[in-house]
Image (cartoon, rainbow, N blue to C red; front, top):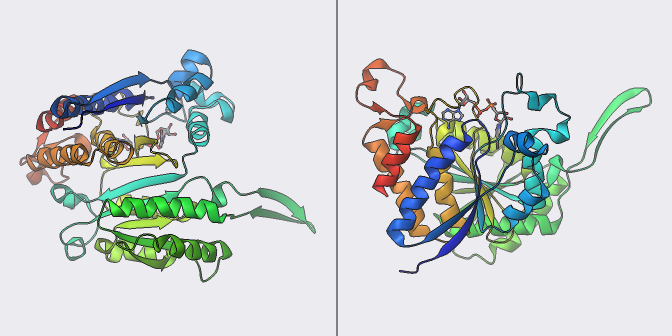
Length: 369
Ligand code: NAD
């Protein structure tokens, strides 16, 4: 067995962040003990807690610490946007500015969001039984630093009429690096890529298609197809089983990843990763800091625990260890343990499961690793 040592930056963040990250570290420690690896944790401040301590949502020192790590495990940041004093600050001083600065400083251009339906949670899926079938397991790969989000924009008066312009720009290098990432991820999965665009209308999509085809030529084992984004939005609810990796640009990915996550049920189960062109990545739950339930010990830590599994798989190449975490999560669900957010809605089904808190869920998963 190859014993390995990794430096993990840990951003606990705000709200439920510290509670769920602590449980993910517990599970990582169980992996370290079982497989003989070593995870050295370096705590990094970001978000509201950093504002309180330093006056800034993310300091240069925090960025340097993140860069010095092999990967970063993160909770969520931010507070109640109506009542927290953090939201009286100018936008560039608020918690979320820290997150944008982190993404930019670390050049995190690839966002990965898995949508996996656990058979134990299939009643949370809003789709019909015959569509769900044996469940589905897909990965949305969204370009994160280009397209409409970062193109030039302005609002001005033209001939007496207010006119707003947003620009959608992609260079071939930007498309190539995300496409390569998408095909690399597919090689670790079921080896299928669906590249989603709007090539019947947009020039940027036509370039996207051309570059994806060039990249695909280097991955003969991967089956790939092109799909128009409007069709993809339909197919996600008509036949989600067909998808393995969905590769797409920033705006389409933003919308499709939310659609895909809704068909799996709870936000408390959804992990995510943001990667750059090295092995480095930032791994975090898809949900926010849930200030409404913070400090009550009831938050679901599974999204963060599964994010830690993604870190092992994609930054550290520890596939067997990542499988061990994912299997432990499945086992705990199969044994009937549920946090409050994934409890069945109907009373008669509630008696067949056991409600547990954040810590207990972490303990159960760590023990099954
Ligand atoms: P949210 O995701 O925090 O909460 C939405 C609902 O989902 C709430 O009812 C919450 O209790 C529930 N929920 C979320 N995660 C859960 C979990 N692990 N277990 C059980 N229930 C869970 O979204 P919001 O309320 O819109 O935002 C709250 C704060 O989080 C805001 O400050 C927002 O800016 C921030 N936010 C941060 C990130 C991030 O750090 N990447 C992402 C989204 C939102």
